[in-house]
View: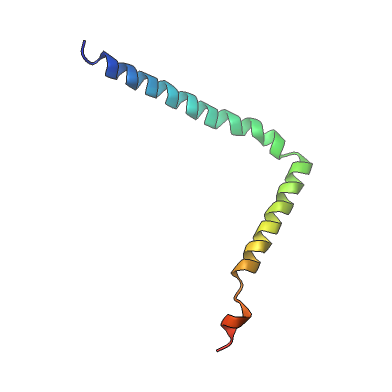
Length: 68
């Protein structure tokens, strides 16, 4: 059987893909409880707010650009 090696590679690839997708489903489900805790949620809200304000300040036009 000359194609046994290729079949084995396909099988390994399929198994790794199934494991990856399973982890991709299970890990966020487990992390949800952590991110729903009030302290974590408040901290994430504060960090997100600071980042958005920083982006807004960075995106504002400078005073030099307003002068003709």
